[in-house]
Length: 106
Image (tube, rainbow, N blue to C red; front, side, top):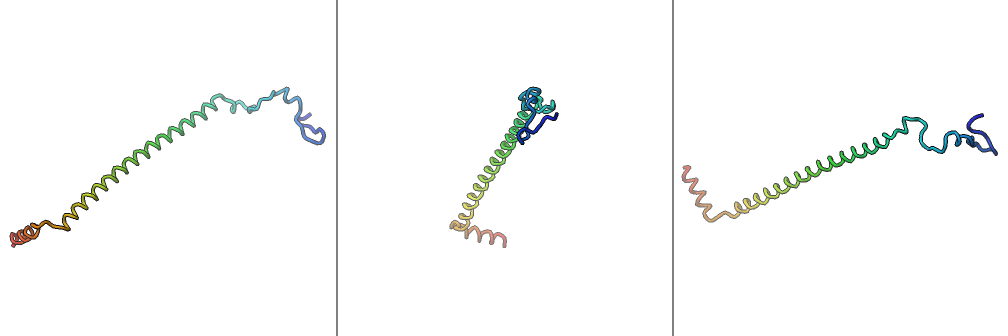
């Protein structure tokens, strides 16, 4: 007799199956019921979390670097603007300095 039979037109499991195997829901193959499977899943999750933490730290360092670069660019622009504004409105001595240089070179 097979483990399945027809009763009332429907296919049913053999009622003796539960008596033989119990109500276990895990796999009958021992390779899939190892206690280390749960440990491996937890370990994999921990590894992934560690990789995420490392990536986050790397991104934080890059953000700090970009912030410093941006601050330095802002300082350079500010200093250059001051210098350019100083050149646009020369001091009253500028023509004398300019002509003095021309006289000295001739």
